Image (cartoon, rainbow, N blue to C red; front, side, top):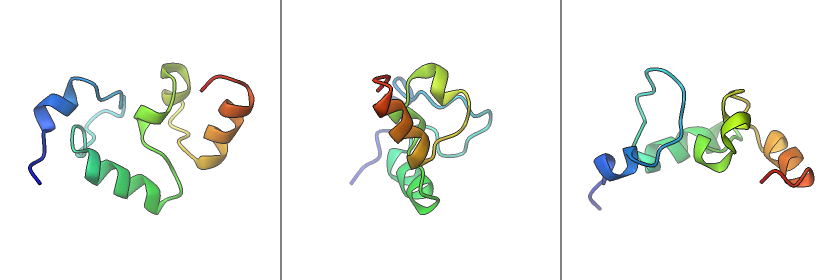
Length: 67
């Protein structure tokens, strides 16, 4: 499968400076799942900027109706 990195970059919400996986969704997802996290695109902007991408943080946001 061909990576559509350029198209993915247009909608990538990762704010981590220098992230080597920006635009490469398969690599990003694999990286975060390995650490029991979700990628930036799963979080609202304000929550993403905390860099807390854990499953638990996501669950709290769901409970609060923010996701």
